[in-house]
Image 1: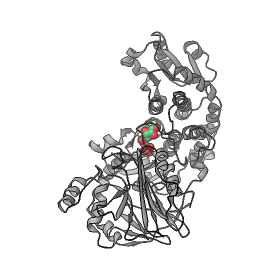
Image 2: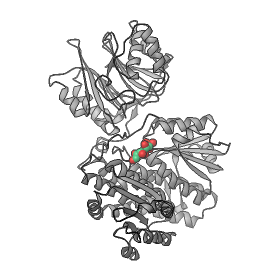
Image 3: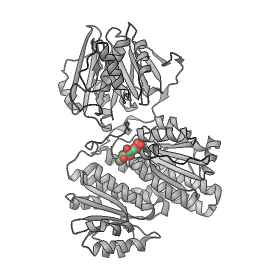
Image 4: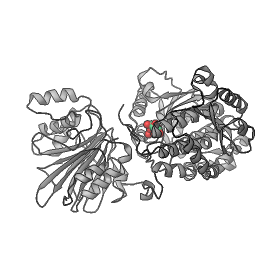
Amino acid sequence: MCGIVGYIGNKDCVRFLVDGLKRVEYRGYDSAGILIYRKNTAEHFLVKNVGKIIELEKSISSNLSGNIGIAHTRWATHGEPNHKNSHPHVSNDGNIFLVHNGIIENYTSLKKKLEKTGFTFYSETDTEILVNLIQHYYKGDIEKAVKEALLDVKGTYGIGVFCLNEPDKLIAARLGSPLLIGIGKNENYFASDPSSVLKKTSEVVYMQDREIAVITKDSVVHKTLDDELLEKSIEKISFELTDIEKSGYDHFMLKEIFEQPKTITDSMRGRLLLEEGTTKLGGLNEHPEIYNSLINADKIYIVACGTSWHSALIGEYMLEEYAKIPVEVEYASEFRYRDPIITPKTVVIAISQSGETADTLAAIKEAKRKGAVVLGICNVVGSSISKETDAGVYLHAGPEIGVASTKAFTSQVIVLALITIDIARRKHLSFRQGYKIVKELKILPALVESILENSAVIKEIAKKFSSAKNFLYLGRGYNFPVALEGALKLKEISYIHAEGYPAAEMKHGPIALIDENMPVIFIAIKDTIYDKVITNIKEVKARNGVVISIASYGDEEIDLISDYVIKIPDTTNLLSPILTVIPLQLLAYYIAVEKGYNVDMPRNLAKSVTVE
Ligand code: F6R
């Protein structure tokens, strides 16, 4: 969603700020803006544009330069994307500039209060109210004014503030919206995402909720909103520039699909104990009391959204079959607003790639309020969800930039399998069974590689079906959630309507849709319910449906009853989603490319959904 970048130093910072915004383009936005201050002439320049950053660049004059600046990409929440609603926002007296991510919930009451004291508002945004609230408190000390204003605010924010009267400093503050300080030499930076500063520095300080930072070119002072000085440690950004570049691929999504042999390996690194036929997860073993709550739980809720919710469904099948613990998977947004029954032996697992999804964060808070132990499965190190949970496991899949999640999904499934095996082995799973699964895990990256090598077949099928208006995805057991995920991938990036269903459910309704124009994708690998899926395929063929099957190498029967077949290798049942999802990711990708869409930035979508 929105992105923030700031710079203070001696060098010209226009390029750095624009490039910093470009690094977070993938998160989704609809307008962008920049404020630049030039020290030697004490001039400032405000440039804003609706649309892409490239439009902003066109509006920035070639001789614009300055050594302090704040910049923003906005994803509209309060008011449509237009010039006056774009950030940076400026106070009525023209002295204070603000960029803001998040939502000020009590903006109506704050607005009324400020209007009574003579303030005028020109935009529809909550941000303009905050910048004027800061002006309201400003008596010559911007740090103090920001603190006072933030104490009045209900909601979430990551903010960057610049004050013309005090041009030697920038102020940053956070509550529920990520912000970090980049440490440079004779210059410092702030940003909502580490990728925005990585070209300049890999040393960062992650801000926590209710913290404020006063940033000059030579120093950064961290305090709480209550004025308590903080000693913060400098951390290294956990990825490299090559991880956030396309590295020769046409799109980040394609790069991330093809990276999966590596990311799956990274998610398993140091976590497989083949000799003992089990797994280990540092993030859980380091908290034995919390981990014991999970092992001995009599009920697990898994909360998540979107693709992470699909991996949660696979986790439900795994944990129930192998660890024998009852599991309920909930959309985080629903969990939060209904009244889930939390007993002393209930454990909640939250799954999130970004670690910033507002609905998932709210569900975690609700679960904690009700006394549950909450574990996290996250990709982004140091994210809000990783901080909010009692313990957890990182995916180590590296930054995911394509808006449609791919490599995070397969890593989530891996981590869920690792947790399942460890718990099951502590209970009743035999060494022999555990050993067999761990052995399969070890060869999984090579199996994924072999499917990717076959991508040309999938590209051809994509070409044939890119003009279809509807798709149906069907699977059973562990591959029912994969059917949902395949349909979601297609919808997100190709804007084709697609539905995922348990294959047997088809005859309870969706079968009415089937005709010669309806491609039906079956996940029909040789598992225990293969024969049932074959029956479902025949039902579709009997109604002239077009069948594309994802099937096992060596299966010849399927060739006779399908129109197109994509063959993949076999693995053990709980790991099969990692192999079956790869052709579906590629199919969605190639169809969207065939239709000429911007795969990495699909319309209306944001990479991390930080509003409820
Ligand atoms: C789908 C997709 C979204 C996310 C969802 C949750 O491709 O990317 O559906 O899965 O917004 O995001 P995280 O996992 O970051 O909580």
